Every structure is written in structure tokens, then in C-alpha cells.
Amino acid sequence: MTTYRTYVTIPHSTYEEWRSNTLGNQYDVDGFPSDQPFQCWDFAAEFWHNLGFPNGYPTNAGTHAAYGIWDDRTSNAGDKFDLIYDKTQIKRGDVIIYNYFTGNPYGHVGFADSDYNGTNNINILSQNNDATSVTVHNYSLAYFRGAFRYRGWHQPTPSLTSDSRFKWVLYARKLRKKY
Image 1 (cartoon, helix red, strand yellow):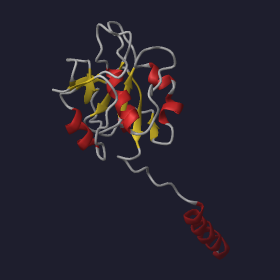
Image 2: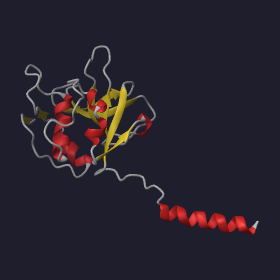
Image 3: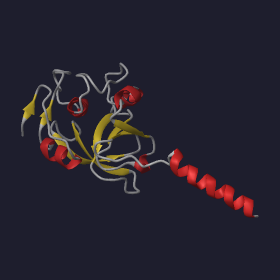
Image 4: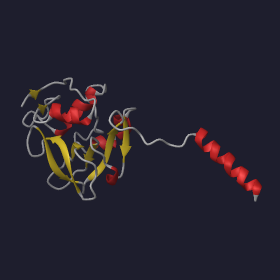
């Protein structure tokens, strides 16, 4: 296990590379809180930093809690992430934001370690759940708020372009004239 108390450069060309280079390590980029420094947000902040965001990202809408990352989702997504609103669309590598609940007033943030599997649980890669280091553990999706899908790991679904639609419009007009 390696402990990092500042931002560091971590290889991340694929989710698998990010996972293998972070699993078992501890990350604390802000020294807060001093009595429990290795928070789930610190691990997410390392990822945002490695994508070129300024220090202090992802922001949390002033909540000082992981669930607040979703409140600032537009600025936190920038041009590097797609936003996922439906838990059934979760893919491996998505950064999942969890809401607060009784016993956890801060929520949680972690990386999906698998695609959504039809159940209300998913394995996630995160810090400060079962241990202060980065681990993979099973987490309920009952408090899912949303997820960030890093475009560098997932190609967006192509949409119809005006060019491809145009051909269908011409074909439809041609058919209408025959009948």
C-alpha cells in the first residue's frame, strides 16, 4: 500500500489501468478532515485532477459531502463526461454518486467495477467504505443519485446526423409520390 497526501499522476488510459494502479493505495489531496483524511471524495478528486480539471474538483455545491458532487454535475462533467441519470445504464468505470442516508450523512462516490446487472447492488472501486484504502466492495444502488461516464473510456452512442436523416426523408417522399 502506498499513501499519497497530494495530487499525483496516475495512468488511466483504460478503467482497468486506473483500477490496477490505485487498488490498495490511500489518497488524501486536501488533508480534511484531519482525523479521517482518506475520504471517498479524495479518490474521485485524484481522477478529476488526472483528467486536467483544476485542484478542488469535483466540487460539491458547498455541502462538503460526496452527494453534493451531483448537485454541481454540469460543471463537474465539463466536456469530459456524459451524465447518467438511470442506474440501469451504469457501465464499468462510471463514477457513481450516492445520496446521503441514515447513518451516512455524506453519501458516497466510487467507480462502477461492473456493468449494471439487474440487481440493486453493484461492485464499486472506492475509498473509505470498508477501509481507508481503495478497495472493491459491494454497494447498494438504493441511494443512486447519478453517474459520470468518462468519454475517454466509453464512446458515446452515435446519433442520427442530418446527413443520414436526409436520405430517409428523400426516400419517404419518393414512396409517397408512388401511392
